[in-house]
Image (cartoon, rainbow, N blue to C red):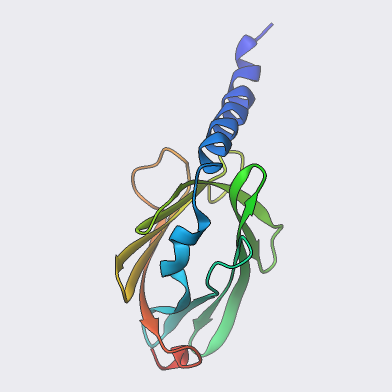
Length: 163
């Protein structure tokens, strides 16, 4: 009998449980810096995100990707407090929704993980300044280097198309 076939799922469950315990201590109001409208990219390819401020234990966000003036994808995002902690729920166009457990929620960093998800397994937002945020998306929870990174700049809401 191969004992290791149970090891990987057990480690994933233990990681989520540990992250959930830490997430119970996280203050969702610390994520207020994410509120507003953000744009990253160039004149050919733009990614826009818009986030509402935390209220009622919930931040609501949305994103869209534009290439050469044509929408290529969108995503609805929720960061919410639950009995288990802080959860990022991502609802990308053309894919099944996925939940990520918050492991860091501060006035500088947001980190969410889901080791059982195919891709991504870790999502991080870092506040660089009042008007700059970096979003990093990792293929694996333990990866040091992100699969991709976006450098967002704050833009007036409704004016992101001018990036």
